[in-house]
Length: 333
Image (cartoon, rainbow, N blue to C red; front, side):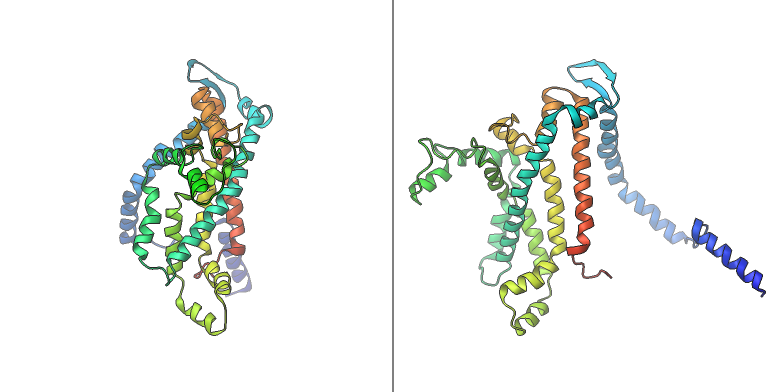
């Protein structure tokens, strides 16, 4: 073989690698059969995703370019980027609603994650008895429909007859502020903490997932740490948290997405009017009011896409940061 032949062969190989002109390995009939049946089995999900998620998203993006009012559907008109300009420049409530959502998220998200981790650690402890009963009790509240649970909380937090105020006054001896009691749902200074307390009612799912992660941590690691003289908090920080960091990351992503869509509790409690004093006019509530109270579907679709884009950016940032603090046992990094 001459030098020119070798060089020519290497150049052809480099071109195939560069431009992707590489022969595909032959596909056996069995592999094609499995691939075909694989697509058949996932086709219900694919069809459902296209019909109920992808196509509505594309339609909403198209609506954002029109002036489309449900009260006057015949007056639809193409207005280009006017809705987007209104959302970014002309409507200060959009930015304010995002700000209120982020403030509430800064309070609610850490509280929910820490409390779910605390409960999981408690139920994973060898000192707790009747673990099955305790797990069931902590998980059961999420089986209650959200509207019913919110109405229950509205009675529990009632300023005059609510159990919380009666408990503070009659058992702990803490006198309520004012004659009518603590206004849990009408005081803008504490409303985010009130909504956080209501949210802790439904952390059973995060608790169960975290508990499953805790039970997957190898006991040999704890035994070795105890032999080395590590205390409980050292084992928690050095072993438990790193080993369940994928679970924490998953709960964090789900929590961020859920808070970007936070709507049910403020809508049930105050009809989505933002009371008290506009503190609960979160971005999802503002979207609902524009789309289904004012029937401005074009502008509502624009806000919906803004919520999606902001949530997407937050998810990308979180996934980008995961390499620095999330530990995967099977990873090569």
